[in-house]
Image (tube, rainbow, N blue to C red):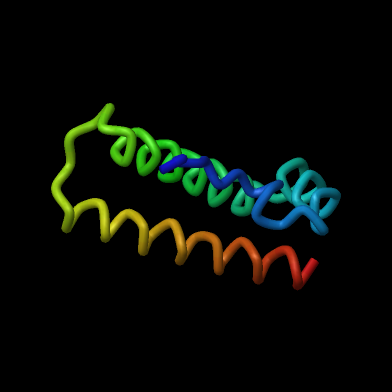
Length: 79
């Protein structure tokens, strides 16, 4: 099974320009994007077996990644 990162640009390819603009102009968006990307990388490392985490923790960070994605999407749409 291939394990992939979920960069924001790939999650929202149609919003590439808005993502870039928000990262440059909005500190809150930039922080959320940075947090999303860090969590995503951590999930991938855990799924690849490079980090040892329990299933409950992995489930919680996946929920947090989804929550951040929802917040980011709302900010993109409201721009």
